[in-house]
Length: 451
Image 1: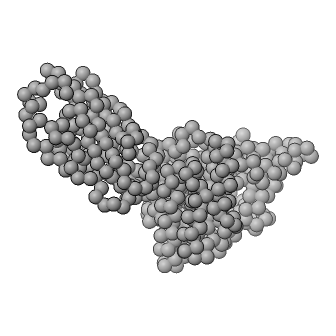
Image 2: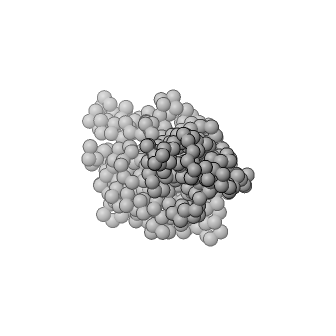
């Protein structure tokens, strides 16, 4: 402390009624977002006090007027981001706030705002209790002013602002497009070059009851990506009564079998980075199930999200259909019931053909309804939008969409190729069985692409 005026001395000797309790008394971790009120932090005597503030959360905040550290514990799960709401009393410079979690610095920022402002950073944390500290590091007092730090709350959420920054997505050298291009390289180089448009791009790998030992299968795929320093995209596709008995029917034979399967899937990923799209169509098409089976599906999906998101390196997107399937309010309610609070967000247009502008608008609306969720879009085959008749199963005349990448649209984390272009939707419109690579269809998608 640079010095003490009479007014500051009065504050120092005034009783500072600080809670002194842990931020989260319950030992179990709570689904994100978790809000810890700053007035519940423990602060050394004589270094600050709880103040009334009608603009603060709960009408109270913590004022730290001496260089000191407030501390507490919060239990959370699936945390990917921390945000501290603070403001500063300025005096020849702004207060410096240093926030640490489990001894690891999460934020080291100046607080020039004089009204409540969120200061945030991505921070992946394992499930469980976490020691949180907020330090005011540069107390200063001058004859005409007094520098102080005010803290309203600490917020832990499951949603990173931009997951896996700077990471490249995995390009699998063993896709059907890659194999066919290699086979045609000499005999038909023009068509091989067209298929290279597909083979050269990162695409998701799908896992389900067709994968055998799923832990081993996932581990092999993730290990191959890790060896290249790239991030794999995986689709978990084994929910009981999958696809309502349609072309991709199947899935786990019971709830217990699915719970075991998803744990094996997660074990295959381990602590390595991965993007997981969870159970395409399971929510948008849930109306085909009985009321009891719907409740079981919600419970299974919520469990799966928790299991997968427990690894800080795994970013989970729960499938959310598309803009022509369910209304925004309906899909948001279903996602909430299926545990999206523990996920990074939701996925749109998986294996479909909806146009990008409508999907972006729909995704933003659903994300807004959910609160902090982000989303991804499967752009693998939406370059020309949907077929005129709205057909979804191998419709003719479609095109590759935007290449996988990180667009600038609000809350849209990635454009991804979740469906592997050229793999059939099922035995419709002349196609082979679902998931089988169909060279002529793949060529058409590539020929009609805008690039």
